[in-house]
Length: 236
Image (cartoon, rainbow, N blue to C red):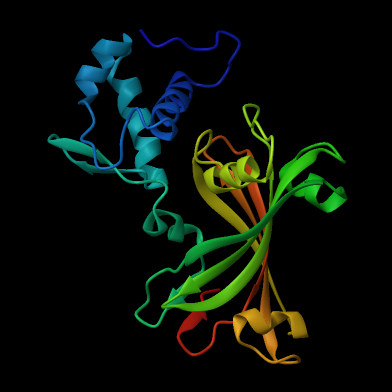
């Protein structure tokens, strides 16, 4: 039987979604795995098949699973670039969404100012993980970004190596990213933007993005400086 929070007033199927997401982020349900049938899960968890089906409908809406009616349900890899790219408005010349290959260049602990606290819905001056990154497409760095995220309760940070490990895990161990809210502006490149292959004074995109989890909680805040060049476009 699945154990649910008796103080949770949400519909039962949404609570079951939380249980399923827990299995996904903990890798109890592995990427590429064919999941048990709705009937099998309803028996295992002592739930109605209708409740299980509605929970799977939510995961399907998030793009987490691939369903073949009446035959099988397969889990996508929620950590793959292909899956994460669905949150990106940047596209390649052939129309595919591009999240880019991400390299973490520096990590540190910081504190949330008013803007960060508002975006992440955390108290002012709360400790956050700050990650400096570069994103590459076809070998070219097209974006540099600074990201802040709340520290997960189980984050054990003893030294720089541990900090980098937490930065690499990001939200994957405790949340499922399902949507992004983004603000776009244009500004002139600075001399420090040479990493993205653009001269000072040339126009670049400034992308401010907040990534949200399946339960509506902000998982990460990013500010990216982006030069699309001739091989990428931004889809408004």
